[in-house]
Length: 311
Image (cartoon, rainbow, N blue to C red):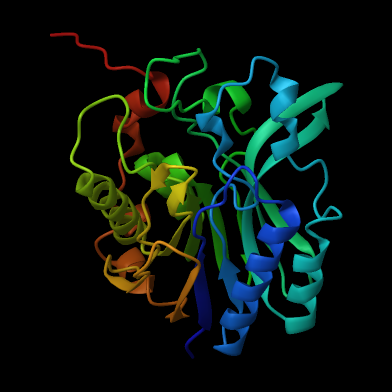
């Protein structure tokens, strides 16, 4: 019997520095209502869905950026989203900046949570592959300071049994690393939820803008096929105070095919009724891990980081 989960990729248009949490949450609620009206049981929002992509800005004092972080979830501003999810019986995935008190000190993470249809948090993920730089570079068009404002995630790549399936999460740059999907795949993941805020232009190397979307698609489609899993990739898109982000929110089937894609740069819902068992044939044939993997030859993947030329 098919295990169907109708999922919505809830793309967001731009969020500006002047936008309040309350304004943003009202937009999230409207997208959730639209998705629920279409029969969706799970709504997936982007990375840093409550604020502008603030790592593009330099703040001399880290505490100046704390206004972009959530100290609790739900908090006063985000509680309406949880309440609406419970009222509608719809779950959601939400990316946000998390300020936690751990090990006797404040710690900042680029985080995401999975919330069930009862409005309760099922699981949390903290971004592991942080891109960009930590030093001040005022002479480039904009900065990418995730390494300054966030610590590397410390929760690993867990999965959760929810929505009648095995769910995993990742955030933005994580999607570019095959290790992300393989660790989830080795746990039998059936759907990976990924939010992203990806600039249209590569500040480190001159690159045609269309390649940004191409690389997004390649990453999501290969991760899906090579692990027999659904992948839902959701953008925050458009021009945030003049800084352009790609769109192209996408739902990818376990065979690597794109089955739904956003068409605009604005708030938009795209949905698909996913059979969570569709990836079983991939997991049992070409990528039957237990028969074909050879971890005794994969040592370099975990023993070194940078390239080491030995010939």
